[in-house]
Amino acid sequence: MDTILKVSHLCKQYSGFALTDVSFELPKGSIMGLIGENGAGKTTTIKAIIGAVRRDSGEISLLGGDNTGGSALKQDLGVVLDDSFFYFMLNPIEIGRILRAAYRNWDDALYRSYLGRFHLPEKKKVKEFSSGMRMKLAIAAALAHHPRLLLLDEPTSGLDPVVRGEILDVFLDFIQDEEHGILLSSHITGDLEKIADYITFLHEGRVVLSEQKDALLERYGVARCAEGEWAQIDARYRSGMRQNRFGCEVLVNDRRAVERQCPGLVIDPASLDDIMTDTVGGDRR
Ligand SMILES: Nc1ncnc2c1ncn2[C@@H]1O[C@H](COP(=O)(O)OP(=O)(O)OP(=O)(O)O)[C@@H](O)[C@H]1O
Image 1 (cartoon, rainbow, N blue to C red):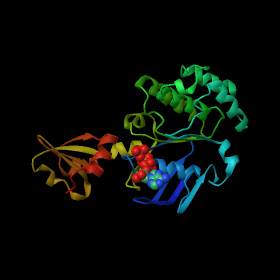
Image 2 (image 1 turned 90 degrees about the horizontal axis):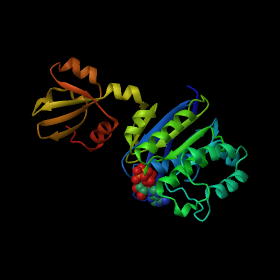
Image 3 (image 1 turned 120 degrees about the vertical axis):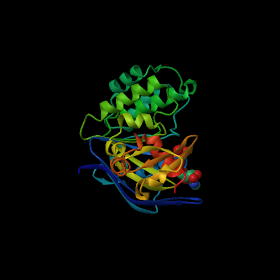
Image 4 (image 1 turned 120 degrees about the horizontal axis):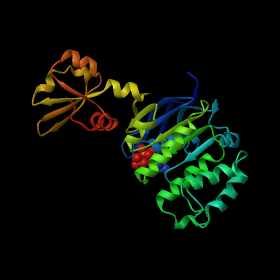
């Protein structure tokens, strides 16, 4: 597998929180969604990848080298962090002038085409932008120097569904180039179901799973059980359980095997939300 990003055994300790043994690989030409509850460690992972957070141990290889490549590496990376700082007193055109000086491959025509595509006023000060407009500006700026790898921390948060759809289309266009890759964190799992090829799920600083999204959604299911019915499902297939008014829902990690084992049981496909909430939140028996 030709990877564009490989994180191996990454550890980072803060007081009260530890990122522990985080490993995953992003193949070229694909999009990975990083999911997990608030405080799971998604931003810390992305910051460690770009070197904004010093790791305690582990290896990070991106774009074929380690992540200490300095400014040469920066040219190939497009980054949007959830606390992206912008020059609030400037307008998008003035910001473009600053970024042109920082990036060898800065493409002013491309930048302005994104400003147009995202309906951003070129001459309005950023301090007068809504949070959604600021996010769109951050994405336009991240794309306009022709990066190969995009690292995006919650790029669609705060955006309405129509704009989210437009941004997802931009990501899908970007990934048409087989040499490109995208790692993005999001709480909007529906967006990831649409565009991600891989999912990495963090919980309390550890990787719960990291695999191909289609395989994951194919494998997992939600069994709708009447009271007591859950016990017939082999314990090794039960990944989580949630009580409801009619009995309980059991998250199963091998739908086909459970269908064979319990032919009468109704098993629906699981969503990423089901997998996240039931794996870490449910009542596990
Ligand atoms: N500079 C820091 N010093 C101490 N603790 C930190 C620091 N940065 C992050 N943390 C802690 O690390 C943990 C993980 O935070 P992180 O921002 O990586 O989570 P997240 O998964 O991105 O959360 P969210 O979905 O809320 O954005 C949190 O408990 C946070 O308080």
